[in-house]
Image (tube, rainbow, N blue to C red; front, side, top):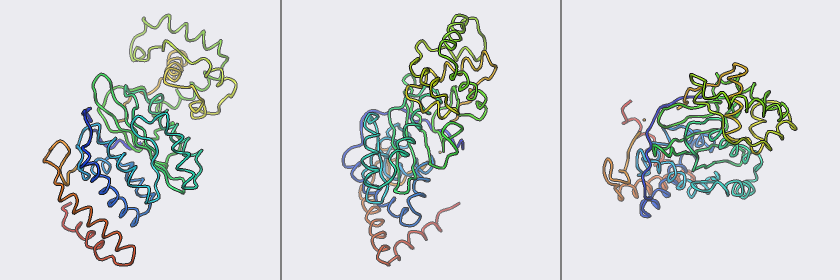
Length: 351
């Protein structure tokens, strides 16, 4: 996992004004259209998974540089803008119950395997809510995918106590879903039960071995450890035994006998409490402790929503959108002079 930096994303109430949001959609359409035309859909998804680029992109669209809405509003604008460019976006803020159905619908339109996209969506959400327990509850999840099955996930959680958000970036180029799978995580650094860390490999293996035992044996482990929990010292105090454990899910684990941690995690009902309980037993009984290392930079172009560092320049935003859209339209019919001129602007940007 590439730990690319930290940004504080406080909760800001309210929403993007309609005049700004409509312009964000048009400008997102223009910028993404040129990138996809020049470099392809896969490259655009790679950029989305880069937190520096995503943050800068949000600021170019005129949104707030550091609020939690940076993620939700930019993703919503992309959802409207990308359809014509061959990239589907499913999910969004408050759409947890409908995301899988939306994936099926849009996967059918693109003629892509919906099962693989749904699996990526489910596992990315489950990892950031159960395998990485960092105090942030997911409330926004969006998956972008192409007709050739490439995908990226941008999701965000909120810490109820601090009212700060944390953004998680994923890209299809991962070895698996449970060992350091993130492209990046952006947020305030703290303490986290990080079962995705390489250092947690033995704890993951032990957790699977424990979960494959008969549920009655697990119950004895849990009861014994819970009884003596208050006398323990050190980091294990942070890993308190959950009050409730999904025993139906553990019975299914026993029946299925998963081969590895990812297969165990994919079983319905295996959530944060079960992951935490198994990690607890792995540490205290088998001496295989998990990692507690929390796996956790930007620009403006036309102004920001709240007038920081200055109010949005509507005229400049509209003109930039028009130039980019016209350049793309002309390039598609062989007239690439404007597109080449835009590229040459890079020569004037200092290193």
